[in-house]
Length: 510
Image (cartoon, rainbow, N blue to C red; front, side):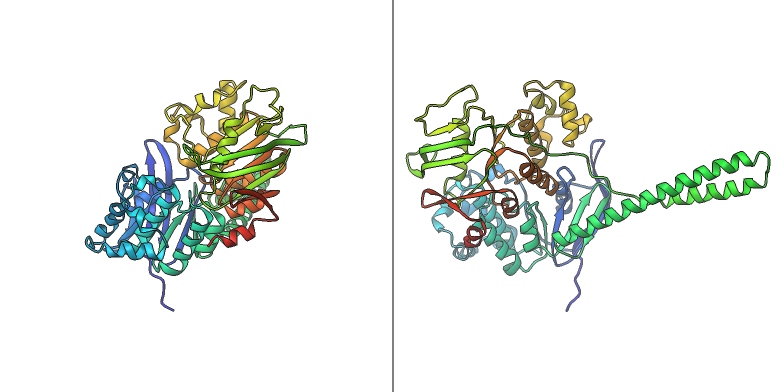
């Protein structure tokens, strides 16, 4: 078997925004494997990718890059300027970057391979769903540009399960190029990647294994280092006490000064070689405990969901009840109306109502306090300060808000910054914090894990499992869905159907 060759990497790299550190002491080399890059929100993963690809320059250290290396890149945020351009032109740009401007037949071949109607080629790129935009850009970068390496930032965001499965097949079978993939989708990482890099405040940690195995090993290393550091602390304390005694005794017996000096030298040696332990940022994504007393939190009857700004029916719900404390996963193919249903329910909730019309199609428990997480976070006031956004919650003082923000991982020095400077993951954490402060007992969540780091996802899973809140959610994260849901509803042929579990649905999305 041929040895793997390093093609891209960093050596003692550091990057700062102003006086704030994004990352430092980062060193790694990529070979021809498919490599995952994992890190908590705000760790600097997207910034690191920009430095690797030349969009940003390091403040210290260097980028290691093979001569003539061509990188195909798909960023987390799809460039807004592509929206008005025809799909054919957007894909043609990829051909141009590969020096094959006139080979438009390759676009037709690509569309046949992925079974997409070629009629969309003349449509504006912005009219496609976010998932299809992302999938086509990935296909263009990998197939049309013919790169030596593929760099993908959160490639599964906004993809439905069928397209995630398609992407997994492409990346593992068809695209024979090295890859660096930033993702928080645990199952996707385990299925696609072979190597794992963890970007943390203490530098980069590299493993020659898939994500789940690598993470277990990293946690074991952290536990071992913490235990060793604890033992060293005990030893230093014991030696300091001994040195203090020798110092007192040396007043009467100067020969004991030698013992004191020897003990102090040993302390200095241990201090110099002391085990450095990683301390994760203290932050928790917590939910409010629910307190809906009645058995039913939400009742639907005779509800019809239509395409926005249209009369075309998506879903007809004759009768549905969601019990207090139930966590319901809503399954369905792309375009089935999942997000539209959630948005409709959120819009129907009126916190000022003490009672709902018994004949209404949507009836909430009077004790219900609903919050809605929109995957686009479109209503987030990006020009407002982080602190002012949180203070808007009833009964929250500025002091309380600062304390809550600190618990969610937002340093005091940042609370005056506009929300617009936050990463997508940090924005998601901020929205969940605000939601918690509203003390809800019914969560309506549309792709809640899209931007959350893995620690944030685990926090959310834990909180949903241990709280008494009701929850109706849509997620293409298979791991999250299996972990959280106590009930599964599938949109099938325009109807809501109870199913025993999600795996049959997941497996069918090919």
